[in-house]
Image (tube, rainbow, N blue to C red; front, side, top):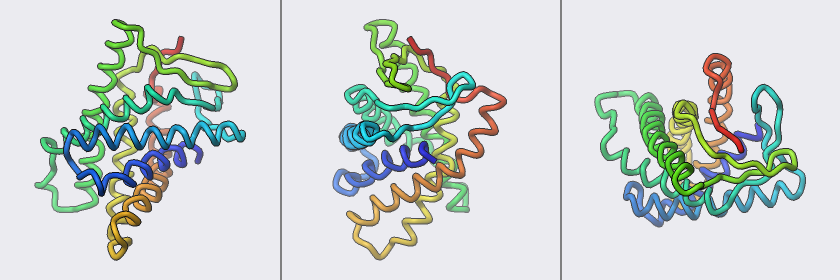
Length: 216
């Protein structure tokens, strides 16, 4: 549940600003990604000060994420959305008639491609200039120094379900102005999409070990 709320928060802030920036340009992705992550991470870190934790499993042990690196999160999300928006211009599924299936395929494959490039870039910068993604887990400061490529599959898996839910909520909130409908779509689509994706993720994670990171 906490993961769903966390991702829904990112989607909420991302879609808050999207109507004012455009929907597919690389520049819009950079700005939207940076600003959305800025507010989402600030919100998360604030809630963490009040005792809220993002519960996840690391090496078979239950952990609580309490803090995220603000600047690296913003830069990473800016690069990710720029790549995602760029990828959407090339990876399309116009031959698929069903809108829900088309949204799901688009969400998965475009997210997967964008994440592969992001992970490769992060790992290279980690080796070359010592870039680190600092987090606080159960009161201990840790640094992510490398991310496994299979993580791209699992991140894409979430968008496989999030995007169709967003499409559904766009239809439901069609009568609302965009500055209201977009944030609601991001929040609800992100939350319910993650709830469903979480069950599928847990199934695959048992077989393929889930998201892979190397912590210093």
